[in-house]
Image (cartoon, rainbow, N blue to C red; front, top):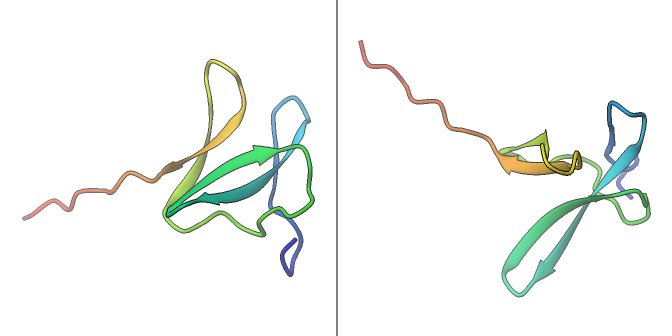
Length: 71
């Protein structure tokens, strides 16, 4: 758990989900669990939460980069 506690996402149905990360080789992946033990304290930079439309579970995805419009 982080200094300020685990990052908690509360779904519309009232369930609480906690953000976790695991590393396999050089790859780091993020997932949500109902267990708060060893949860991350915040969302990593450049990511945002979205709900999987099929399962309704929270997931992380990389934020879309906004293109600058030249004048």
